[in-house]
Structure formats: structure tokens, C-alpha cells
Image (spheres, rainbow, N blue to C red):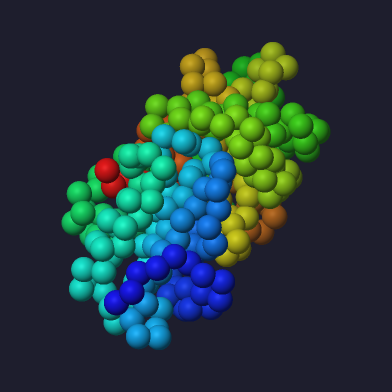
Length: 299
């Protein structure tokens, strides 16, 4: 077994490591980490394992462009070569490639082989996402939306009247405080870029806000993932927003009602169990399933 750096021409063999039934989240956010050597703010190192003439595994450690307190990692081993210790060997190898002794983080589904691997090598969970799924066409959900209590002197509606710069700043404001206690943003310029990507992907007719005294106080962002599923990012604009849960519930109900009117189906909340307002709201809503996710780190 030879472990070497990524080389030009490895692309097809590394792509073949991705199983056809792989989780779309793994495909987009972890498998895509592998690639040629990079330096600078987007530093990346990928190693591959070759047996004979067959590439049988790949492992990558990369800088996180938003959160410099952790690195991001991915290890993939071909089906016929799993449970033989190769994943551990590759983990030790990419640890040696870190620019500093930072934890290597990733996202795994609870109960998956990746979850078992992280546990076996001493990894821990630092955040949990329930992945609450709702059906916009469910009469029970529409009833729930219609019965969300309005708040006096608050205006709720789509964000179609706001310009792009205002929307980018609003998403960044929300994202920053939601993550500050467990995955703090350390690169403001990168947050601006990520926020611009979210705004570009958002359906502004479904994305809604709540305004109090003319100030945007809560937002629900509806976007479409690469696999076509719809997701909602939602929270207040400030952690200590007065009547925050009530304001956010109004925006969530407005977005879900608009989705139902548009004939849309399943939407998934992209939220965390620590979100102080959203977690309460989604727990009270009629939902059809969960798609839980763990954010993990290996020291």
C-alpha cells in the first residue's frame, strides 16, 4: 500500500470512491474537498492510498474559509478496503499535514459508518442539527401557520423590496451570532462571500422578514440545495431580539404559507439545537420527518 500526495489525473479514481447512494450532503461538502494542493487562506492537502495500480482511498485536510479555529476533513475508503485500519492510517497522515494543531471537523449522520469511525478515533460532537422536515401541502401545517399569533406593530412579508446588499448584510448579521459560541466566524470577508451566495440562491418570493419600527428583526431564508430539496435558514437578526420567538414564528409561517400557495412540497430546516428561537418553533410545528446531522471534531 502506497500513500502519496494527490497527482493530476487522480480525479476520476477519487470520484469513483463516492458511492452512488452516498448522502448528498457528503457528496457536496466532504467528497468535494479532495483535490490538488492549495496554499493560502484556502489551504488544502489531499493524500491518496494506492494498492498495486488501484487507488483505494483518499483523505483531505483543508482550511475552513469562515472558521479558522477548526480545519475541515474528509476520508473516503473504497468499499472492499474498509475496516482494515486504512482510515486510521490516513487520519494520522493528514494530521501531520496540518499547519497547526487544530481539530479536524466534519459532518456525519448519526449511526452512519462515518459516525462510528469518528467515535472510534476519539472524536466528539460539538453541534447537533435535527433536520426537521415539513410538507408545505400538509393541511395541519397550514393550520399551524394560520394560528401563529401576530405581534402588534410588526410587519411581515417577502423581502422582494430589499436590495441585494441589504439582504447580504442581513444574512451575515444572523449567521454571525448564531455561530459565535461554537463555530465563531473569524474571516468577515469570507462571511460576506458566503452570504452573497445564499442571497443569490434564495427564492425572494418565499424568503420573508419581520420588521419592527422599520427595522428588520427576523428572517426566514428559503433556498434550493444542489439535489433540488428546499431548505430554510431562519433566526432573529440579533440574539437578544425582544419577542424574538414570536417574530421569527411569523416569518416562518409566512414562508411556509407562500411555499404551500406555490404548490411546493417538502422543506427542511437548516438549524441547530442551540438556536434559541428557531428550535422552539420547529418543535411545535407539524412535521413529517427528521434528517439529523452531527457536527464532529477529531482532536
